Image (cartoon, rainbow, N blue to C red; front, side):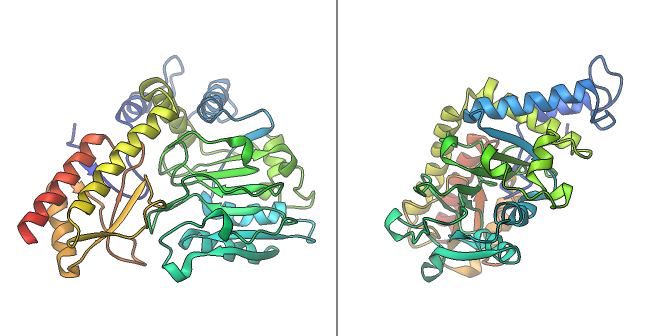
Length: 364
């Protein structure tokens, strides 16, 4: 087998080795089926069981109540930027509140503006999107159709430590980059969506957890493929779903349940990994600097810079030579970024922290 490196990509990201190995075994033929997972019918009893198990795993991990549907979509989180307002602002007599803590929240609001009325409940632009708001800073409309947040902004490495209180207004979260990384009180969410390629599986499937009453807001005249109502009624198989990607979600959630032991243990490990990197950066103050403010720092994406910008490319090149890849920051902001999602083993983070210390000693 080819040697694997530590991939710090923001997505598609590392997958658990045991899940990849099981997929490798099933790629030619599923046990007792004689056909590959890539060939199996989405209407078959076998795939129906796989998708049901993927849903049940998600429900178990997040304690999803019966009041919420678990749906599987294509189109990534950016399709949900459109679908959420298209379905939930249908009446046209309410606006939606958007909390802007980075680039993805801004993109979500831009898409929503084409579907209905929106307003900014908070914008961290004056702080260069390096923090989340306090509860007191939120200017929420108590009559809003919903409040939208981005729970973890990958580009700036900014994460909500807890969800804001939105009262009786449904909370909607783009949870793409911290989905299944920690326990959450799902009953406080009207809807949560996440593209899988960070923590839950490969690119190609997006998971939507949505409350019954929000499903019922979908107008009858929406295009079928863009209707939460239609997709809920068809149990995510209105058309051919992304079969292989859903199968991988099943394997990844099996790993979270059976090998990790659930989201409390996953969260503890994620906190340990993130602390290793933040400690390494703080210890080298004057050489590295973190983008996000304390209290808003992501456990998933550690965004940082070298104080001497001329050293960034040598840093990236030297890291890659050590098997530490994809540490370049987003093209819109530059710098460096270590994405340490669930499947990144602690050994990879330890190696990166040691590399950062060695590089500082050599060039500081």
